[in-house]
Length: 573
Image (cartoon, rainbow, N blue to C red; front, side, top):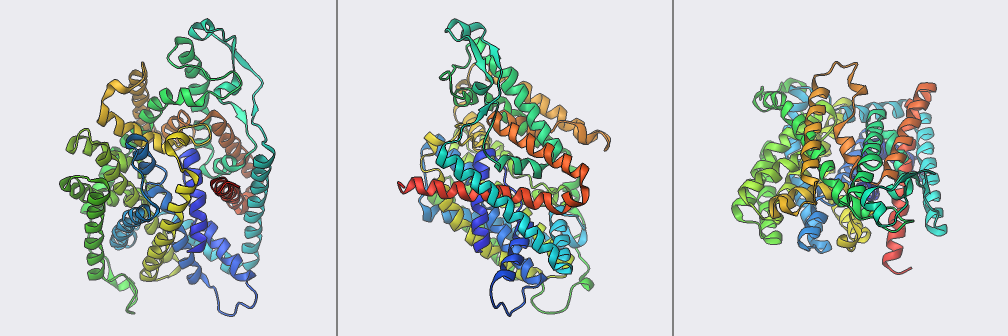
């Protein structure tokens, strides 16, 4: 629980920076093993099953960022001004997360034992567990690599904060045209557009984890968006420039987020619709699992009656909290929870097949549905979708953990209990971290320091249903439609292209993301991805052992140090 509480700070920090969280299961396995080895006089064994419970609780806690803390909740504040106290925010994210855990536990037998879905992250964690308990010295080496990466990133973050290290803008500029030239501006520097190298290793680590295709797609999106579209917006007078020496992200992202959101949402929903045949098979397939494979000992699996009681109780709690905190109409809250059950099942199957839990698309489906059920109500639109997205995330998380357990011979019932304790730890730590990092969302978010792309997405969709198309900046609707069309086409090509071609196709969600984060973030992500690819090609054996853990260390080191500095600023130090 303590380890997960620390790691959830990393995902909230990263989520508010770039909109992505990372899986911490392997990190938790290595740190748990290393910690137990380092404790003097440890007599009780910390074996593979104990570490599996540690990893399960820690991953549940670290998934808390997707329960709305980096998306729906800050978007609600930006649109309505409503904020929650620490106590109520903790209750909210806890209820949302437990709903997903309960649905995931109910799906275990069907998706893991009957359909035998791979759940790739669960498989990777299981293989890591088997490896380190077969070769203890290997685990220690990987722990040292992880801690070394964390130390380097933390030291650089400390230097950045103490000595105010600047971003190094790329040394080039573009001639000002049109409306910008008429205002007396002679040139636009690449620094104005955000193209810079920054003294930070967080995005480098993230790039190393997400793969070459996603990294190059982010770089492509940054070049197209901030290198070509942004100067055109300035020339046409659709966006006002900032101060000459500043990065002009703030004024420009208010326009750029529309095509970025349009491409991400359209591509995600297209991929979701293309997955419907498999989803239907999962919902209508065989419901009977062979019980001969299960051990006879009592306590192996979660009791079905207990599970039904928990599901019913947490569903009622989710409805009650929506009614009390957000004054959502009772029929809207009931509809949202009912839809959540269906979409969490969808998310569990998609996550099992691909390793990606479609939190964003699930939330967008609910937002679109509530645009019809409760038109013009931004609160209902956001918070009902928050239930769906958060539950989908935790449904996928527990299923990956249960897949790990199945592969090493662990019992599901203790894992489900560990997941609940992890959710509790993550709810407390995550809510505190969000309130410390972002005490004033209206002033702090959607800025160069805190781009919060997930917040931009959720806010934009809710705003469309609340205020209509008239609130969009001039020309943004056309850009949204064009970008959405490109997103649909790329998603279709990605689905039906030959396997050999797919790695070379741009990812529409990554391209869209680059339009709503600063260009310097995209540059650093690309550097991380390219560096990891080069190392993997030159030293494949070493890279397989250490690239993921070093990258995870870079993310953890900078994130935790950033949280410390945020806390220091809050208390006035």
